[in-house]
Structure formats: C-alpha cells, structure tokens
View 1: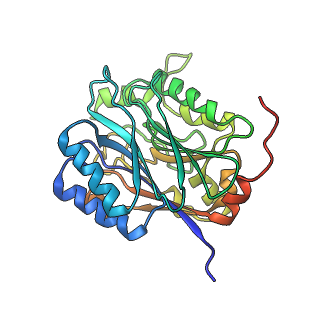
View 2: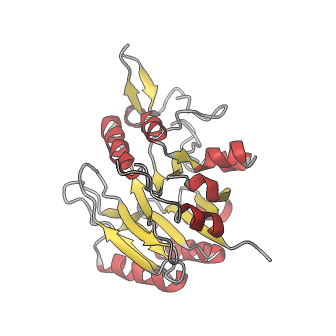
Length: 296
C-alpha cells in the first residue's frame, strides 16, 4: 500500500502570464496532472472581472477552494497572492487578512488536517521586488509564525538569495547587466560594498524556519531540489537562480518526502518554474498532534 501523500504546488505565474488565456489554461493543465492538495500561487490578477472568472476556473479545474489577499492600494501593482486548498483534505480553513508591512499582501490561511488539534499556517507570498530593507522587514514579520507551538508552510517569490548557497548558487553580475535590477537584488554592507541580498533567508533560518529544498538535498539526498526556479530569461542579470523557495517551521521538514522543480513545459506557462513539495500525511498528522510547547 502506498503511503498517503499531501502534494504542495508553488508557482509564480509571472505578471501577465496568469491573465493570458492560453498560458493560464496551460498552467491549469499542468497543475491538474499533479493533483495538489495545496496550491500557493503568486502574481495572481486581483480585481478585474476576468481575474474573478479565472479564480473560479482554477477552483473548478483543480477541485480546490481559493483564498486571495487583497491588493495593496498603494502598491501600484494589481496582483495578489492566493492559497488554494483541497477541502476534502483540509475541511476547516480560516483566511487571515494581512497588510502591514508588505508591499504585496500575502495570503494567509489557517487549516486543520482531519481532527488534528493544531492548525497548519499556509502562506503564499512575494517579498518586495525593489527594496532590500523592506524584504528583510517582511521576512522578520514571517518570524511571528515560527514561535513554539506553531506549524507553518510559507512559500513564494523571495526576490533574494539563499544565505547558505550551494556551489555557484549566487549570481555573478556580468558586464552590461541591468543596473537597476542589480540594485534591487543587493544591499550595501557596512563597508559600502554591494552584496547579493541573502538577509531575508538568514532572518528566516535564524528564527527556526527550514528551507525545504535544502533539507531535501542534505537529508533526503535529492540534489535536484536545488535546481533554479527563475531568471532563465535573464542571463546577464544573475542568470537562473533559486529565488522561489519553500520554508517550513514547527518541525514541518520531518514530513517532507521530496521536493521537485518542474521546468520543461511549465516554462511555457510562466517565466518561473513550478515547485512541488510532497509531504507524508501520516507524519504531518503526528506533527499537528504533538502537545503544544509552553506559550511564548
């Protein structure tokens, strides 16, 4: 008998891709193959009639229920993040509105797996694309979901780099690169030198979050989990990088069976790869049934 598995899909459909009929339907065809129990989508068109229709098509095609964050009224981008869940896997769900301090509001949903007493926090997010200091602040906000007793899965476009990179995992900026993009993806250190921005990842790790792809590589011996997820069309601007990442807190990494980066036909629907995380349902249930730690 096969072990029951919970499949998590994470995908940034890139601005414009989710609003394009052909690419949006291609994306749904691809997602339907994997039958996700959780789908964390970034750069979801937010307010137009077409966007509402597209969300309904996603729910119907994938047999899931969607929760979208409200767009930031001062953010200047008519996109949002969404969490979709399979209700037969997670019958109880609560949407938790989040605004400050985010440039693009994340979608946070609190779900229960069966009759497990502890909730699982799900977050679909975009860290700020243009301001490294705001990115670090947004990452610091995420640490509020890593206190003892909390179990959290947070994923999306981090717009920054791993703080413990594998070999050749950080960008080297070639001559002729987009200087504005370089500024957006770096920060100025105390010596006045620009450095690749790895601070959000370091903030999350220091608080107890685990990068699930690195866990899959180091513990499950799955080096393919560290494949790039974005930047395929930007060879001079850092090139392919692992800027889309999935983090777990509260022992969630113990349930990970595998992490997979889907490129191929996924790149016909978006400029970014599709991430799949497979969790052991039995192990996740044990994690969500453990006695709570003392209140912080």
